[in-house]
Image 1 (cartoon, one colour):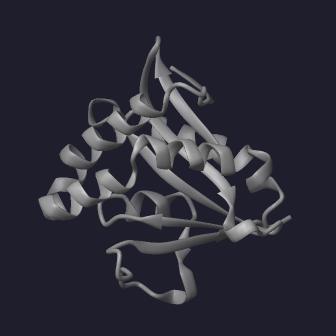
Image 2: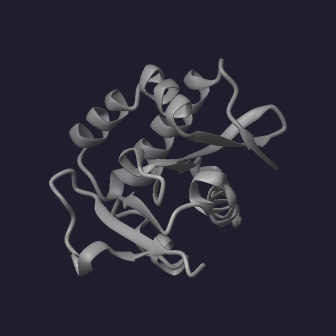
Length: 157
């Protein structure tokens, strides 16, 4: 498995990973209409824009993209960053790839310059991120209107 920055023509492949992961992994926690809406919101065009505004990474098994994640400035901040669109195909989950992807994102220049990193987390993965040191933003343990938990981690540098 190799983790690298996304290439310009891979938005559709990244979208397909996200859609499959949402349909298979997140369907136990969210209704189909929510998942369909989220898949629509994370279109290839939106993913291309995210890759331009931040640094999008992919995990490849040979030539096949099997995971993705993005780190970007949080609302343009120089001292805060956000992790977005972190997904691993269900067939590859449980192998430590999510941890490796988060570690890669946290070593990116956007994360290294940040005092605080935020991540919107679904119910499906909130405990995974908490295990990696992220905690509830402002102590709020309930999901927001988008049914996501807001988690954050502060760097001790």
